Image (cartoon, rainbow, N blue to C red; front, top):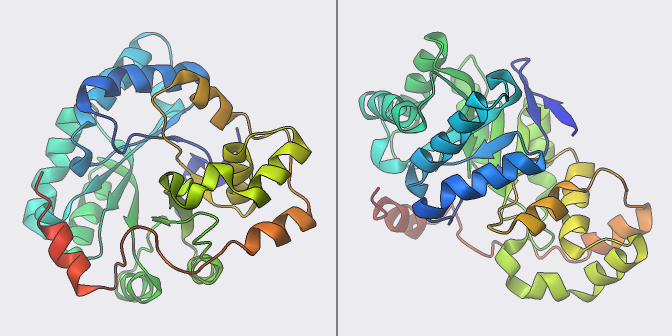
Length: 283
């Protein structure tokens, strides 16, 4: 496993296991399988409704010999918990659901609501030892610059939609210039645009004796971008983590770059309707 050193000095696995859209009743089993496969970073969120299942599997792993400091657990504050007071309360509630004394990374899930107040709550929780690193998610260039300019402590992570059809080369440069590590969500575009059957990706995969999913993950990791692929099948989990034994050449990278449409496949976080839609998602 390769690691990234964040701007606060903490180390994070560049590849982890995502739990978005895993039903609560399946979460503990999936996380146990992921840990068995060698994953040590587990990503969850208040809005996913599965922090309890993540915590169950993580605590079982700790009881069975995996050291807590070998694990990197990250979760996120949802919009309905934005603002200093609500976020402070929700941080403690997340820790309780996870059954942990601290999390390695706590992220502001969306750039809406009182994210200044939420960031202050995260900073206070970090000072109290409840959080190791602080991050944000879905913060476009203007928002990530805004929060970096107005707080003395820069976010360690910006978790954003990033896949071959939305490559975000410029956004990555902005984050790198600010000292912020980019973490990809939706790395496989949830299969949209027939990603797994894409002719360019399929030919590159065949060339390297790998799957399309492995090529996509290798492409992201090669750019220094952290990834958190999700699967409920242990065979796919094993496949997704087996990406450190090959690399892509310049021709591969040139071809993949042609797939970039510079358009989201999910939600435009600059849109007013995005704020309305997401604020309506209650947890």
